[in-house]
Length: 456
Length: 169
Image: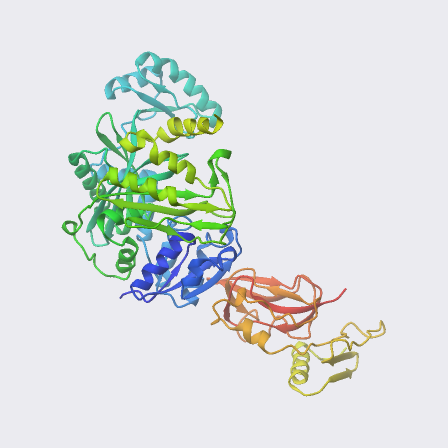
């Protein structure tokens, strides 16, 4: 049965995006907002707003019982979790299932199956999807060298008891692995109380590529192409584009198939993204994880595929069979998204909440802005710092890059510090223009040179 | 002591509130209640009267206050300011989060508190239910309940006014 009224358990641009997608389908929206967001644009446009709790997210947006109680009390038959917050809590999906509310996302069972790292790896293995080649726990440096000789160098040691860079040593040959192994083991022992190591292939030049899918819940899974999200700082994506120009058509086709093969066997329902690490030198990709929700960067896929993924989510959640087949999806042109954040790159990305006094976003053909900001909006200090997503779409990548540069030049925000000057520097950098970057480029090449530009 | 309970007091207050009387002074055994619609008209409580004696000045609050804040259908009740035409020192007890407001511990049981009833900071005055989880709300102040601003078993939002309490030292 199509949804009649949904509860939106989120805030910011995605809440507004969902309000409008619902409205376009004739679905009423009830916004569950924190006290800080009671006067937000999304609250203004929603049919009804319920203030569920105080500003801190843990007492409002992160309380599954509160949002489900609000949904029930307001007579909602669906609940859209957006991204972040509760979106990947299988307990929320389960609570909705118990209460007869359609969760706009995968089943609780699917969220659990892909959310658990080991379970997800089992799924990938069963689907024949490659993962980064790695060893089991290793007893000695000799065993490590034997394994590395087998898979080839470079390799990286990892602590089996934890992560965060401790116990990690990159080795490019047997000699450096033998030397590094002991050092890494001691480091792991000190950090985690357990010096056990394993060895993985080290990907020198990696790109983050991911495939957008939509499952019908009946075993049918359609993909909407891939995205390249290699420009990251501290694992936070800053620029995303579609398609991924680093891939050959053959590799691209294999990547899409891998994503579909991974999720079809569990009858995956609704939107999801399968993330891969692409090894540029070897032309190989490795499964990383599944994100069982709509993602921040979904607009670039919408632009090239000409679909509205949020509307599709609402229709599938309402029980409609997937309204399109793979052959209906064709990629047109190139799209790039940049995330505008209220952080100051010149002060170590210090958060910069406050009141927006000037807000002049760019306009024009091929320019899209997903944002819930306007002049006078107070950017609260409680939540994620993203204030806008600027998306451009053009016939090919060079045209899209040029359009991005123009749009960023027009974009004027005053009252708070943002990363717009940094985004302009990225958009005009020769490496970016040429599409020549990997996951370490932003942190190791661009940011140091950007900092120097400021000093000189 | 008398057998007068919270419901009796509420009945007296309600009767007075709906009347055209300017003031009402009731003395029964050790119980004494004085109601007036004139804010400046306050009975001087003497130490001689018993615990239950309240220097009760009831404001002629516009009915809009309760109608305004009590309706679950109102989409932004919590964002509407509470009527300010009650004495400044009155304390508004607000909902700690969204939930269903219950005045009684269980269906059919007498309410935790009624208008005119004295409360201590730790006196339980209502329940807020979220998905079958009931959390009690305390008055947070020593005083007398003067108004109940939300409707029983209706949805209340975070920060929505539930009670008006006149504090007392």
